[in-house]
Image (cartoon, rainbow, N blue to C red; front, side, top):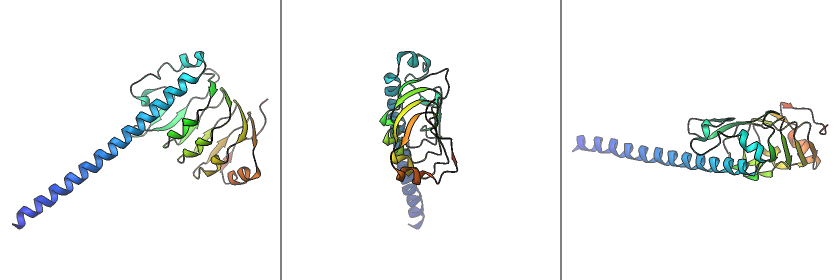
Length: 184
């Protein structure tokens, strides 16, 4: 009887482990699907000429798209589209917060306008944020100050201002803050 109990326990733990790993995989694939949908909607909202420059951004695996790097689970950790050659025209969508595993966001040297969305604060794993040399306007959202791991922040050469001193004070913990100046 004892010899039957040991294999049964081992089988039970194997089944539990497989169930948990399938839940993790299902969750990761759900996150990846949301990320794909978010990026495709953003692409569609951009100026038509910009959409052509992101021609690799079509269906399939977003980890193979230009400017995207993913982790082993297939979730986006790096969105890097800096460059005057791309010249992205449009707004940063509020849905950016869906990219919850994002560590590096670089959209510098484009033609992005509008406010920095509050939802950027939902990217709680963000380490590096570079939105410099765009036409972003309005106040810097307080939510940016809640990104605890943020090491580098460059918002220079935009039309941004500190909405209140609370935001500015909370952001002073950063190791590297790029120069802050009005768009020239």
